[in-house]
Structures are given as structure tokens and as C-alpha cells.
Length: 233
Image (cartoon, rainbow, N blue to C red; front, side, top):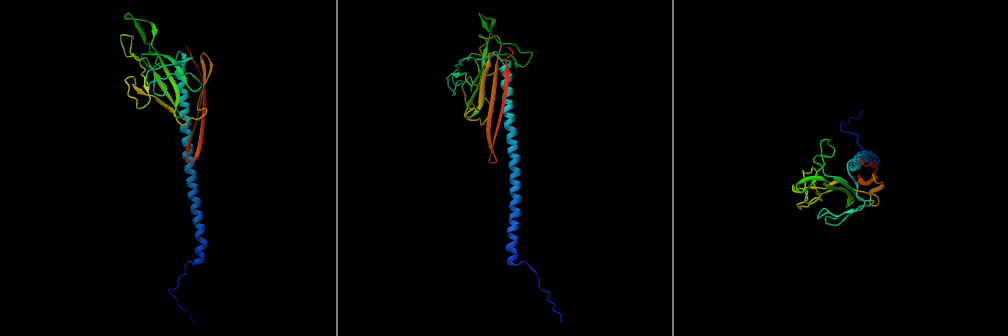
């Protein structure tokens, strides 16, 4: 005697479901964790590369400025508002976290071989006294900035023989007449204790170290770079 049960179908029992479900959930969780980890690695690697690039770019900029300058100031500079410290007329003072470079104003980019020095006028004629400007590297809100400070009368053709290629800069948002462009933001998230360190090795040599830390994908990334720059003048 044979039994023909066409409707009989085998399915998962509750016991089987209770055993399989945790395994499936574990596999899916492991897969998601692996994706998150790989994504975090990629994001952290990219952030590290950007941080290293910004530090090296800032160091290269400082080195180029120092090489073509007249040297660093040994004391301080007192600009007009808002080009001074804290966007006032407060004095910028040379120390281990502030670099003040003394340079000649030029008619073109200082790296251009066709550039010439802008001279002052005396009794309507050009004399040997050049227009001097200052480039200041300083920290504000854990960020390294580059500011160009120029004489307030730098556009007066009665006082100077040529128009300078350089332009005075101020903090973003400043609208004073002297502010022709914005300060350059070079590196953010500087180390709070030693983010920008200047060592004055001699009258014509400086050593600069920049250290910055950023947090990406829950990870702390720290990069540092150092150069020694020699003034050729």
C-alpha cells in the first residue's frame, strides 16, 4: 500500500531557524565590520596624505620666502590695524612660534629673473633706499597663517618709483583699505604645544618644524616635517 501525499513539503523547523539565524547574522555583521574597517583605512590614509602634503607645502613656502628675503627680523614689527597681531595694531614679536621675514618689494614675482626692486623717491628722483615689506608666519586658532605686511603708503607714486607686485593681506573678513587680499591658510590642527617651531641657528639660517594632528574615521593622525632654510643674501 502506497501513500501519495502531494501536499507534503519539507520546511525549516523553529529549531533549525534558531540555529541558522545567529550564524547568518554573524556573517552579515562580520562583512559589514570589514567594509567599515576598510573604509576607515582609506579615509585615514587619505587624511594622512593631505596633512603631510599641507605641511610640506608650508615648509617649501617658508623656505622660498626666506631664501629670497633680506633675512629675518631680530626684534618685532608694529603694523597698522588690522594687520597687527590679533587683527589690531599690536606688535608681532619674533619668537619660537612667530617668524618675521624682512624682504624687498619687487616689481614682479621675486622668483622671476626679470623682477627689480621697488625704490623710494627722494626729491622726485629714485634713490638707493628700497621699499621693505614683511612676511609673517604665525599661529591663530591652531592654524598656521602667512601674512604680508606693507607700508600704508605703498601705492603712493610720489613716494615710490614703481608699483610693487606684492599686496598686503589681512585675516579673512577684514575690509580695511590696506587689506587687498586674504592671509594664506597653510596648515590646520597644529599641535597645541609645538605645532610651529622656529629655531634661529644663525643670522642667515633657520630651522622650521611643523607638527599637526587630525582626527578622521575615529583615528588620530599626526604628521610632522622639518626644514633648514639658508638666506642667500
